[in-house]
Length: 70
Image (cartoon, rainbow, N blue to C red; front, side, top):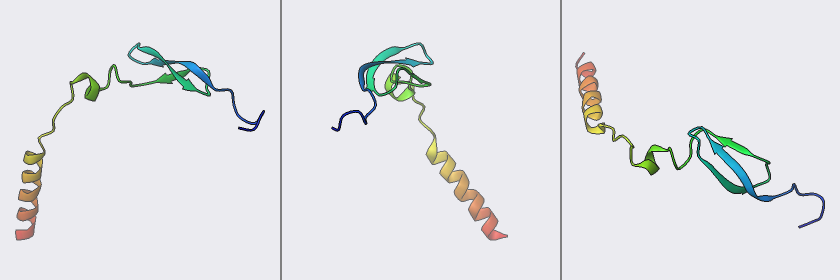
């Protein structure tokens, strides 16, 4: 790297989540605030919701068939 043209890189930048979790990452910023992290994201916590896509698709097809008859 060339000297004096790159921002300072810190390997221990504190990250604060809206849920209250705190951890450190590498960044050029002094501190980072995020709204969602791996401690509160539904995918990582196992609380994700499964959508009933089959029911929605059937309703859509029924509406399309009904409008096609008119």
